[in-house]
Length: 163
Image (cartoon, rainbow, N blue to C red; front, side):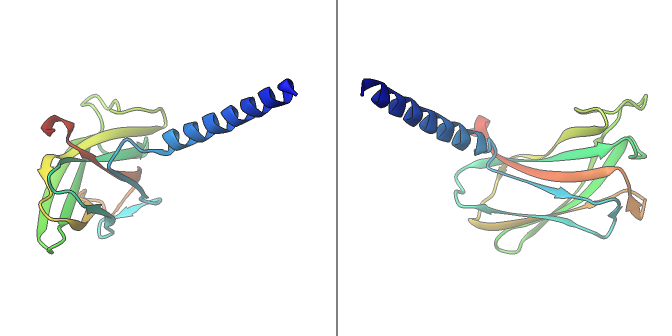
């Protein structure tokens, strides 16, 4: 009888431990993160669009991209155009340049065949209105169809330095 109760306790503990691990592993460390595939070629007129909601305007945010490129990417730099539209419809545009490779051609970032690079977009941003924000991203390279960029992620984090 005592052996049966002990086995039930062990099984219950196993189930609880498994549930705790599943819930903690699924939780993202970011306020918002979404990855969008570019496809085989990224047409210069094709925007990648991200939508995220802000409920608390007392926080400051950091906005970043996570770029993943292959060795087929033909350049060392990477220009992108962005348009952020706030809940009131006000637009904020930027032209950004990032370096994906060193001057000697060595790729920057993590990975072997697929390089992953964290790209800072805006830091300590006050998003003043609650509601939905829309961020559109286009490549700003001269190629009509850009090869070698696999996907782009938008990462929005609460600015811990401002707290």
